[in-house]
Amino acid sequence: MTEFIHSGDEKKKFVRQMFEDISPRYDFLNHFLSFGIDLYWRYRLVKQLKLAKGQTVLDVAAGTGDVGFAILKRYDVSVIGLDYAYNMTLLAREKALRRKVQNIAFVQGDGEALPFADDSFDAITISYGFRNIGHYEIALAEFRRVLKPGGRLAILEFSQPRSKLFGRLYRFYFKQILPRIAGLISQSEAYRYLPESVEEFPDRKTLLTMLAAAGFANAAFRDLTFGVTSIFSGIKSSR
Ligand SMILES: C[S@@+](CC[C@H](N)C(=O)[O-])C[C@H]1O[C@@H](n2cnc3c(N)ncnc32)[C@H](O)[C@@H]1O
Image (cartoon, rainbow, N blue to C red; front, top):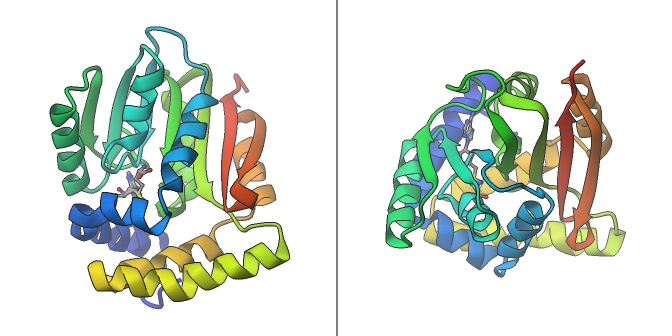
C-alpha cells in the first residue's frame, strides 16, 4: 500500500482526504476510465437486491450517489446514502436535486461508526467502498448491527480476474495506463492508490470467511466481467 500508510487509521485519513479532493472529477473519471461499464456493474448490484415496496436501504460509501439513484429507478423504497467525505455528499445532494429524485437523503458519516439504531435497514449496499475502509471487521460489525434480522448486505468490489491472459492485460491497463491518464486530469496519487488497494484487498475466499465470521449467513460471491469485479453478499443471521 502507498508507503506512508501503516495502519487502518492512517488509511482512513488518507482515503477521506483523497475523496474530498478528487470529488469534482470523480464521476467523469469513473465512467471514462471504466469505459462506462461501471454503470452496468452497479445495475447488477441493484438487480440482485430484490427489494420489496416500502423497504429502507443504507448505501455506505455512497460517493456521488449513483447506487442510490439506480436503486430508486428499480424499486419503490427509501435510501440513505452515507459517505465519509463531505464533498461527495454535497455532490450527491446536488445530483438528487437536479434529477428531482425523492426518497433519498445523503449524510456525512463513517462506515465504521454508523449513526443509526440497531435493526434499522432492510439492506445495505457498498459499491467500491469496502476496499477503502480502514478496519474491515469493525465496519462489518456495524453493518450487521444496523441491518434488520434477515437483511441483506451486498458489496460490489474490484477482484482479480481469473483468466491469466485477461488478467495480464487488465493489470497492465490498471497499473500503467489508468494512473497516467487519471494523473493528467486529477490527482495522480489517488489513481496510484487505486491499483495498489485492489491488489491488497482480501481475495474472494478470505472475504467470504470474514463475512461468515461477522455473522452473515449464506455468504456468496458472483463474478462480473471475467472477474474484474465481484458482488459479495450475506444475510444477517440471528446467531
Ligand atoms: C470509490 S468511491 C465509491 C463511491 C460510490 N459508491 C460509487 O460506486 O461510485 C469510495 C467512497 O468511499 C468513501 N469512504 C471511504 N471510507 C469510508 C468510510 N470509513 N465511511 C464511509 N465512506 C467511506 C469515500 O469517501 C468515497 O466516496
